Image 1 (cartoon, rainbow, N blue to C red):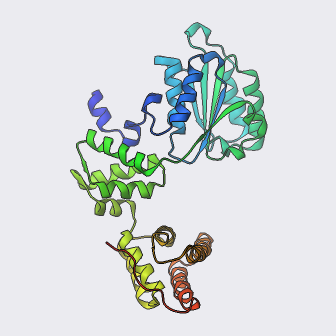
Image 2: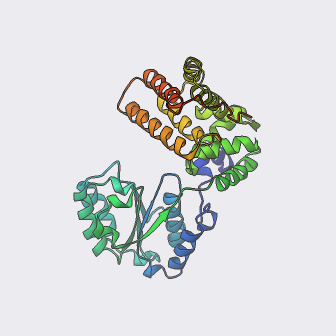
Amino acid sequence: MSRESDEAAQMWVEKYRPKTLDEVVNLKDVVESLKAFLKTPKTMPHLLFAGMPGTGKTSVALCIARQLLGSQWKTFTLELNASDERGIKMVRERIKDFSRYGRASFDIPYAIIILDESDQMTSTAQTALRRIIETSSRTCRFILVCNYSGKIIAPIQSRCAIFRFSKLADTDIVKHLGNISGRENITLLPDAAEAIAEYSGGDLRRAINALHTAAAYARDVVDVKTVLQVIGEASPKQVQLMLSEALGGDFIKARKMMYNLMGAFGLSGSDIVRQMNRELFKVSYLTEEEKAELANIIGEYDFRLTEGASPDIQLSALLARFRKFTKVKGQPIERRVNVG
């Protein structure tokens, strides 16, 4: 298979994964600090990358491996997903064996061990890992990748330089999606790009996967209708209308719209609750206090759904609470949701 055909068959999230630190999206402070370390590789400490999924932690770790190890980076990089092998056996057998051998004859500063989802390791495994990190600094460097640094034991944290990755801004995601669509000869309409960015919640990997799927459906032009179909979300306008009916006191109409959303889009109860929470804060005629009270109600029913309660019954009860909320306040809230 030729290189061109091989690239065409790749998932976009891999095809457009950054190969160098300069290609990383919106992590200027992190990248500049890491570049300073890479100027003198032998003094670079072990690293701990923490932050929400899809913000570039693993990609940055692989960029470091490429820059430090050159063409031999695959040979001298051990990449493990700690959530798959989270016990002490993995530490003692795979990590210890890889870390103990010197590589001076290969003209590289050291080998690199990347532990993805390291916060899923057991405390016993982390304790064993601490000792290996302590004794193997001459032959290798560890890059620990996690979502929650608080789940990493303190002795490991103290032996690492910690970098925190924040979620990406919607504007950066929209810009990156535009670059990808241009390279793929696809027209991505602005409102479609914004819908993907909002759906992704700062997770660039999720955004790229959504674009790839939408492009497969649309082929040449990706519009917001295609995006909403692909990501399994209703139009914000439809959710706003449902909220408007409930807040205006028409429970029966709001409930009917809720069932239409579930049937037409195949949405789960949790999906609808998440969208209700998002659209609630766009309602201009509610006060901050009212939004806070309604958000508290939404949180209660979201918890019920995670506990396994019946989605349609709980969503009906949620809409009834919204209607009752307006009555408690003294009168139905005027329906002035912007649905344009």
